[in-house]
Length: 348
Image (cartoon, rainbow, N blue to C red):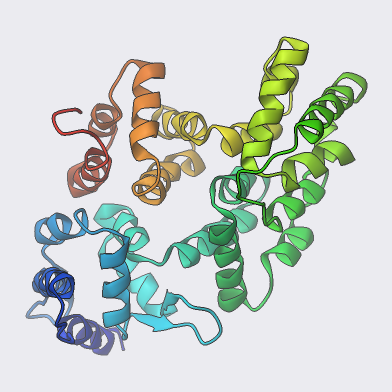
């Protein structure tokens, strides 16, 4: 069965529709070159020229990846309800095995972002409370439309909503907060209300000052403010909190999940810097190690420059150098190249 799948996979990658515009020719040229990095060995098994593949993929922007998914219909299927391409499950498992030396980074990079986030959310829910930080990351660092897309992909893949899955699988005091976070669709405009900002800062301080610090994640006002307000509004609220009470709000919190929510909402580079540090420390857990690929892949086209600069500032070591110290082979090269392309030429 897998040998047949191998043949279909190779054929589908080599089959290309010609484009007439200039940009299209460039994309198809890259896709043709990528096809050459795949071959069928004499045993009939799928083989990969990893160096050639790496050189192509690290240069691709989101529009190139989108074109590749659309032109490779035997791997990526158009979703019937929502506008995204998803990878056929049996081929997804096959590709992950084939690219195991890349530790899944190639599959993550070529996958539609909505599907990628939906798969990560499902994995976090299956792993339990030690992985719930990933749900916070997805809900707080993505735009409203990106989170909505992940929710749609989750429905398509699993025939249930992420909201109901979180509500069913998460137990304890985190349930209410996590359901509210993954259900959120925040306003993304620039308009703010100074009265509401001051009011929210006061309500947060009152809840923190008068409440049980181990139970703040259940406080109605904290849940309402952190799960519904826009990110610019929250940034202004946290500044107002500091001006009014002389402390960063994170300093007044003992609950790690609340601190992660606050930093991921208003200072993603600081949040991701901490996640990357944990992923590359000597005693990192498996959950922590997996974050290295996830953060580099998902943020390569977003704020990787800011993350790398924040990492360098905090730990006095270039991010690319640290990756080279802990990773190996083409996996290492792939990650380093994704970081380097976001940095000014000549910098690490």
